[in-house]
Each structure stands twice: as C-alpha cells, then as structure tokens.
Length: 397
Image (cartoon, rainbow, N blue to C red):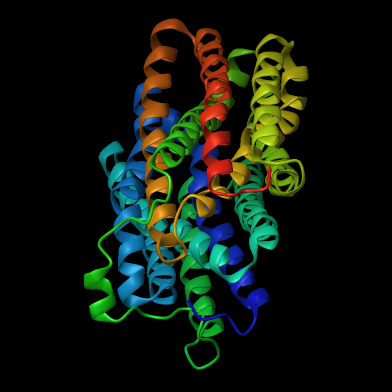
C-alpha cells in the first residue's frame, strides 16, 4: 500500500471516526435502564438490544474488509458514519421494542465499516514499534468517544432531556462528521486509500494468515475478552442499582468505567511495545479479574468509585490483542485479518449480553459476575501457544 503523505492525517481521521462510532454505540449502554423502564423490558430483552447492534456489525465486518480492497477505505468509512447516523436518527422516532431493534440494527450495519479498515491502514502506515503505539492511540480514541458520548448522555438525561432528543442529536452529529471526513481525506489531498485493481482482487482469495494456530489462539482470547467487556458494560448500571448505589451515581456507572478505559487503551499499546505482548496481556487479565471481584464485594458507593480502575484493565487488553493481529497476517491481507478478529469480537458482543442477561434473570448478578471473573482468566493458559506463535513469526518479545 502506498505511504500516506501525512501519517498524522490518517491517524487523526481514523481516531475521529472511531471516537464517533464507538461513542454512538456506547451511548446505548446509558439508555438501557431508561429503555427498560419505558418499554417494560426484562434483562434478556435488554441484552437483545445490545446484541442486535453487535449482530449487525458481526454480519458485515468481513465484507467491509473485503470491499475496501475494491472500493477504498475512504468511501466505506464515510458510508459507515452515514449508516450509523441514520440508525440513531431513526431511533428517536421509534414507538416500540421492535422499532428499537430495527434502528439499532441499521446503526450496527454502519458501525461495521470502520474497525478493520482503520486498523489495517494504521498497521500498514507505521513501522512495527510505531504501529503498536499508533493502534493504542486509535483504540484510546474509541474510549474517549465512548466516554464523551456516554457522559454527555448521562448529563442530558440528568437535566431532563428525553432519550429521543439525545439520539436525534447524535444521528445528526454522525452525518456532519461523515461530511468532514469525506473532505479531510479527499482523493486529491491524499492517496492513503487506494483501490485494488480488479485483477488483484480476483487473485487475492486467501486470508493471508501466517500462523493458523497462533491466529486461532489470538481469536479465542479476543472472544473471551469482549464477552466479558460487553457483558460488564451492558449490566453494570443494573448491578449498581442492585447494590443500592446512590441514584445520582448509577447514571454515570458506564461513563466511570469508560473513563478508566481511555487510560487503559493507551497503557495497553504502550506496555505491549515495551514489556512484550504476553507479559502485558497476563498482567491485564489478572488485574481485570481482581477488579471485578472488588466491585462485586465492595459496599454500595465504594463499588462505584472502583469502576474507573476496572475500566483501565477491562478495556486496555484490546490494545494488546488487536495490535498483535498484524504480526500473524501478511501485509497485503491486513484488512481481512482485522475483519476476522473484529467479526469474532462482535460475535462475543452478540452472545455475551444475551447469556449474561439470561443468567441475571435466573440466578442474579452476583453469580453472573463470578462467571465473568472465571472467563477473563481462561486466556492465561492460551498465552503459551500465542507466545510460541509470536516467536515463530520473529516478534521480539
């Protein structure tokens, strides 16, 4: 892929896109208790709301990576923002539970057109040492967007704005950002988004995975990480309610967790580049399990103030795992490799909320969070085969 005339321009555009897309997606977490009360929903239905959005992303993540080889990432990034904005705009007008699911499905389709595209571009535009830090910055921008959008939604709900007004405004904002990205990354100003020739597309029928076992192990770790991450974020507000945390704090439970996630994304990429992938990953998984246990057993309001610490490690591991994809996939197939990983992550985001919702309905959230602790520790033994795979591919650990 040709080098970008300005890597900073590329990284900035990807970070803005990521921040808006992830911010839109995460704003739903804040509104779940409101939607549950408004439509009289159970925990499983709440999980289904999140799963519908993630399911749409799951369906289109791999097609997005493949389409980028023919049509170019710039067009698809803008298309994704328009699609996500349309979904949230429509959400402001729904009158029933099915309408919520349909609107979020449309938004999820739009959200699929960014993660694999941007991750591939960044990995190919920066050198090995730089690309981990750049990907850490990219991942952190998503956390900043999540924090900004969820905090804004929490504040607006607190002062009396309806959830419909908030989603309407967010939808319009996405459209405005889409126009800005289109102008910022104009074809005349940068050649960062080339289109593969038709003959190249026809010849490119492999996925480019250099190490099948290593890539499969990494995919399993990502699946378990996202399973717990998404389940925790979907239900943490309800856990706070069950622990009788002050009403004024409950609305900010997601934002508090994501505030730590911002630091975690930067820290994950930074530590992986310096301490090594395996050491950093083991550290983050152990501290995530410890943090969830502390939240589970800490009294009332104390548990709320532990959420930023949990967010650092809960969210930060993604910078480590996603930054490792490029070591296991050939350079010309980066978009496909990232598409596979993000598809697996989205599958976890579909399954997690539904499963944890069913368990929460049946056995309560104390048992649910105990299961989360167990699942987040499963990647520890998987680090051994991943370590061997990275050594086989000459990664300096």
